[in-house]
Length: 408
Image 1 (tube, one colour):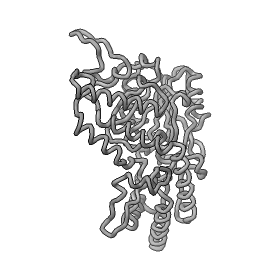
Image 2: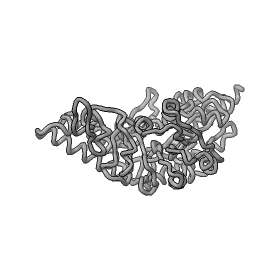
Image 3: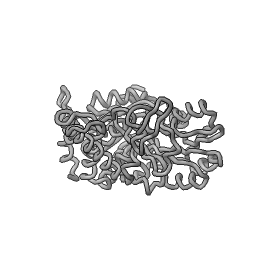
Image 4: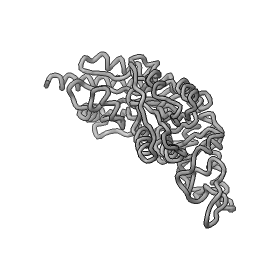
């Protein structure tokens, strides 16, 4: 299972060939991952074999669906080291963050501290609630080579800071933040801690107990799972800090015309019919990742990242962002060709090599402004990527550099 070339057989999309016979080289894993057959089959089986609603039926089909749905919760909870009762199914990381943002019982004057390197999903919700509830919002700076500056963070946290919201891994720089240290710093001031783990849970071992966070959220589609499913960890004992921002069926145990009584965790935060197929598919994705080994995935991506940095730093026309040490980053490398549009570079990588990368500001516009650039090209790797694909990447990018630099 630890040979990437063998793993690739599990991913139907990688069998695609373009009109000229070139295989797909998929380097856009930070945006979404490809799906293995095992996940696709698990979702198909739900719709074909036991497509019933959960929790509400006493008949056999509904009971089977309910059992598989809750088994899926337990599987994913174990993956990040929490209890099933602490794991809420949501649509994605964005919804997980918004659930906390709109659920916390804010008091006027409460403070929120985040950082300038955050994805818009971990920035805009705090801007909205800070205006709506009269909260104080501040941002920690970053220090070279692109981590959250802990001194700046500590300066921003006061006795009124209710929440610190921080990313585990930057979706632009690939930088890994020391969220355990950040959590301890925040807790020393009596603040809650939310971790955006969208770019870490798929790529390295993550344990919420070890991180000492209060909330942690991630998306299924970035870790081989279906779209439309994600998770929010809520540490046991702090659920009363939140009012469910969404109401409906299943999240209550009793209703009168003038009131209601909330259900237990985690169902109080899951109103309505959930994404049952998505949860089942996500659990299958977790099983797949566990069979491969998260430590192996981390090391494999480290080697790919080291090779990508070597390629990029060997081209005089390229500017690379983030730490140069692959030990300090996940499998994300952002760069630009000096004086050349990132969209043009991405389009040429696609045209010349059938290489899929992302260009733009990657939902991190303030970070790009701080870096002094409009946009960047981002290559991001996963367990099915290979050194041979990076050889093609080097060849095609060198050709692009020669052609564009010659024109200029």
